[in-house]
Length: 123
Image (tube, rainbow, N blue to C red):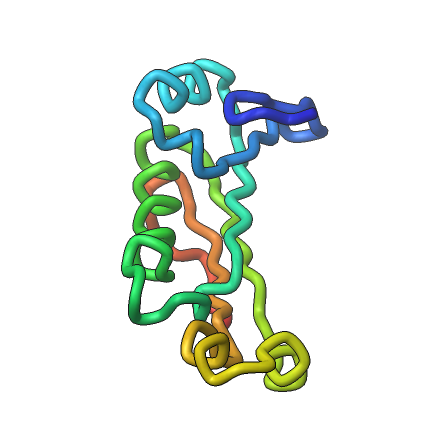
């Protein structure tokens, strides 16, 4: 199992995984010590709980990914899940549930080691 400070060797270097527990300062330092050249920061659908929980939104999580790229001097692949209207209709059987999520939610991006966006953000 890959934990918050794991790295997997691949052709061009070390591939790491960034996940929520990685934001703890001690784990971030350990993660940087793994000399990762590329980190995967896969995020959930950003339309969930919008606008009730800004910390779970794309702005905060994309910012975390960008800062991680700069501080770790590595590339960060930051895909996010997208939910269709069909899935919302299937999952949300009450008005309260429908207020918590809407179709969309994707904000995938790739950041370079200098924090620059290497791709246009994919909604």
